[in-house]
Structure formats: structure tokens, C-alpha cells
Length: 394
Image (cartoon, rainbow, N blue to C red):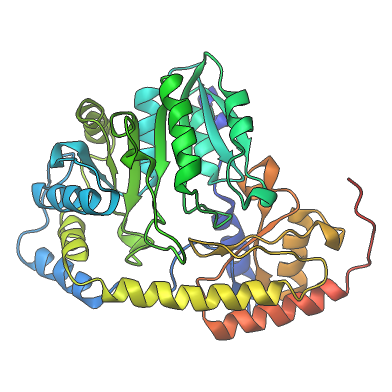
């Protein structure tokens, strides 16, 4: 059966491919330490699980409105108003099964074939994949280590053309852990307004922040009406398998995206949505504990990586990824990631899994126990010291 030509433009997420390879090695008896997959290693808080179970036992098994149940949309609007200091209503909210559908639906609804979308690189690979899939032009903006993986505003201004339609932001960022500060966002907002652009602001890691205060570009003057906020429950509440996310956007865009939901998945699971209400409205102690543990692990893994020959790692300000520069090992990113899996039984991701500008880096998720992180660091150190040193040419 011949596939449509657009399928050749569809990318993938390398983390799941590496996870599959690692699982295959485990079946052969290998003890693999998983630093490749981007999900909390904590279980969903029990009160959220209990709420879903109660819903399933009390008729929470039927269709809902495509945009989500009113109670969850209201809870999300209240949460966004409080955390972003903006004024949105439930009509601005669309609930979807996970965060990715907002990427797909927003690009599908707002970007025409041939138009351009500027996206962070290295960045979440689904951005580029979906831009290419709909026939738009994906324009990468490099995230530079010397700027702590923030945009160079001169680069951004240079990349904007009359065909530019959308800018994608991600802060705190996957894979770098970088966080955009208010001053940079203010300058980005000026460019966005002056060039009449739309912003897709991926804020899925907004609660996993270790220093400073989170700032959403939607909170800046003139930006709420031209921003789609992407957020969800997977990272904050350790609910990756529940598939529960949402977008916050202008009402007319919300109505259009609701039609896309109707035409694709109909709606998000009822009991899952009811659990989401509980997650947002219950005490947040479990989130605070999880973030505090992530911070301890961050310090452990970054300090350890910086002791390994050829590794240089900045201290990430958010998310749960370390993104060390590894060019001084003399190996390309994918070659080193493959080597560490084969020789050290440590699963990591090459920076190139997140785009061209990820060459020279690895991504390691520290959503794992301190014990496993220490073991991984020891194994990586031993493996890297075996590498024959070769000069790195610019």
C-alpha cells in the first residue's frame, strides 16, 4: 500500500527508539540505566488516582464536549490566571490527550503551506516534524551554550521574513534545561508584535523550575491575544501515561482547535479530566517534593558530569535534563550515545536527536534515583576514559 507523500516528512522522537533498544538489551540480561526517557520516575499522587477511580465507578465513562469538561476548563483558566497573571476564561481553554496535540493542532490551524515557523534547535523534535508535515518551512534558531541556551535576539531578527507566521518558544526547555528571562521575552515580544507573528509557547515544564521566577510571554503587553500556551499534567503531576494536556488561546482559535479535536480524537477521557481537576485544586505538596528531589539530582549529575574527561555541563535552571557538551571526547554525539549504551549500559540521547545544532551534546534525564545516577556517572567515566583521544577540529 503506497503511503501519502506527506508521510515522508514526518519525523519521530528518538527517545522512544533508544528506549526500545535498551529494553531489548535488558531482555538479554543487561542491567541498563535509563537516562534517555523524559518522564518523572515518581508515581502519580494517590489522591489523583483515587479521584479517577471514583469517577470510573460513578459514570465517568462517557463522551465529553470536545474542548473538555466545564469543570476542568474552569480550573485550568483559574490556574493560568494565577500563575501567568493574565485574564482568560474557560472559553480560551481546549483540553487534549497529552501536550503534543496542541503542537499539531495549533500549527495545523494557523500555518499555511509555504509559510515559515521559527523553532528552537536543539529542541523538542516534534516541532520540526509537524512543521514539515503540513508543508510549511521549518526555520531553526540555534540555542547557544554561551547564552545558557537562550535565543540570540540578533539571530531571531535575522531569521524573520515576510513569510514568517509563527515562533515556537519552550521555557524551561527540553533538552537544554534553559530558561528564558523576562528581559529577553520582552525583546522577543517586541519583534513578534512588530512582525505580526503568532507564538506557540510550550510551557509544559513551567512548574519544574529551580531558580528565579517563571515568566510566560503571554503575560507581556499585547501578547495574550497572539499566544497559544501549551501546558499539561504529564511532567508536573507525573501523569505521562494519563495523556492529559491543554492549550490556552484566543477564543476564535480555541473554537477552531475544538473542531480539530472533534475530527480526530472526539474528546479526552472523562475520568482522566476529572482527575485533572483534582490535580489542580488539591494541595500541591507532592509537586513541591518532586521538584526538590529533581534539584538534588540535578546538582548530583551536573557535578559528576563535569568530572568526566571531555564533558562540560552547565547547571540547568529547569526541566529535568542535563545537556553536557561532549565534543572534547573526540566523538560525535550519536556515536558516543551508542557507545555508552553498548559499553557502559547507560541509555542517553544524542543532542542531534533534537536537531542539527545539538551536535556535540548529549541529553541525560535525571528523572531517576540518586543511586542509579551515581552508577551511571561511574559507568560513563570508565567508558569515556577508554576512548582514544583525538584532536577536535573546529
